[in-house]
Image (cartoon, rainbow, N blue to C red):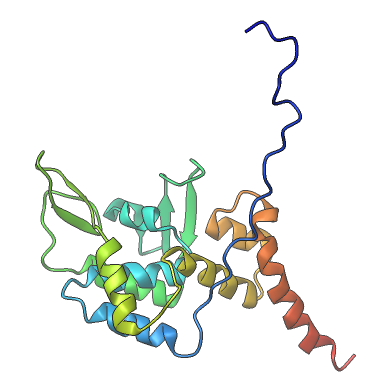
Length: 200
């Protein structure tokens, strides 16, 4: 248009929101796991447990293949992540047992390497397990409100911080690129410090 000045130069992007801070409370974890285990397909419970025990994103879990898992080293290697970088996720005892159970699933077909697979599409190719509807149904059975699947990642990350892991260690597990992304979890460490300094 022949403008000499960019008209949007001084326009500022809106500040990012504070982000959700929803965590599992009381017996919500037990109710959620029980509701997922009631589902006819065991994939739902295994997927939810992995999210809760590893802080992996839903897409990362649904795209897992048997080749990504090393039971000897007790790690999962993620090559297709949101940040487009390879990440190695160590397995806690709970995560390790969940993975072992999923790998032993007897009904697994030979036409896919996906750990959690769906039915073949029109092209005859199996894609990842579809979780949206069954996840919503599980929340309703567990009578849990205002809780999203991504909140499992927040819960897992919070637990890593509460366990005393450093920011660098937590970031290497969760895949957060910036320490600023972990800023929301620093209050957990502050609350823990209060109990430690009372006797000083």
